Length: 391
Ligand SMILES: Nc1ncnc2c1ncn2[C@@H]1O[C@H](COP(=O)(O)OP(=O)(O)OP(=O)(O)O)[C@@H](O)[C@H]1O
Image (tube, rainbow, N blue to C red; front, side, top):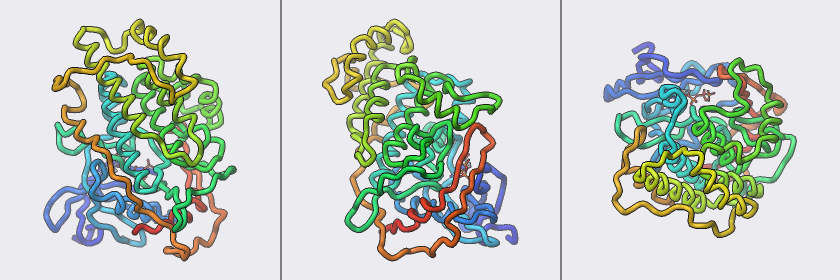
């Protein structure tokens, strides 16, 4: 028991090592059940785990977020014990040789949008959306995808009046370059729209098997990634998918800094694509048939300039009760999509809940194993997050 974290969690193996700590598979000595324990590196000046605990606390009881079991300090490092989850979407994607069917991508899209909506309803933005942050359910056959890693999350609503955080420029980079929004690259304060832009890059990655700025030898700089993102058209990014994906991206790119995303609009587009895939599958048409996509593209392209415009009814809806034969996710995930109630869970207090951060000029830029990526710790932003008082 000497080696047990917090005198309770017996380390079994390392399941993940991030920039800011190590995640262990451990045994909870109180009930002999396996858990995941994240222990922060002692060298971290500002505790991301502390931030993560606050956000995860607010999310407890919502589907698709790991259960918080315990937290504390071990040898001066913060730790968090949580529900043990399965492999990440990145691992699943690599296992399937970078090939997900369109239906699988759409099911992933549906679940992740729901997770983002829940997080946003709790008044937090994630700021590091990428395939590694989504883990499969630990039990085989369960369709639930979990969102993890809230170390960089931030409250986007300030003050008791519920005011949105202010638009700012020259912000230090926070996130992962490959999936960061263009505005994040440009140093613009992140808001809900940026989580959604990262989400769309993730969907493009799953659909195309890669992203135009991913380089195998990690030789590309963050600046070059931003330049390619700026250059590439939305049509190109989703050339292998239905044009609804282009509409989704066009809508997200049209959002203003403080805008509340229209999650229903986005979810509606995903559902329409899913229904169409089912119809096409029944008719024996490949869901990635270029001709089919081109035909639809011609009808939809006109509408792209106005993402709110009434769209032509491109897709017939699937018959009720139609069975879904899918490879990665099982039937029943519609159940997952029950709208999350709107609730305000983070509020700033005029007095700070956590101690003043002394050195405001520290900026850490830490490169991950998966270069080209950078993930930085923004002290000012962390301070703001620390001011988010969770009721
Ligand atoms: N609850 C969990 N169950 C199972 N595995 C987990 C769990 N939480 C994290 N992991 C694994 O540990 C890895 C690192 O976790 P996490 O992303 O939370 O840490 P991090 O230090 O912030 O990492 P990074 O800097 O790479 O984002 C994850 O990619 C995942 O594989």
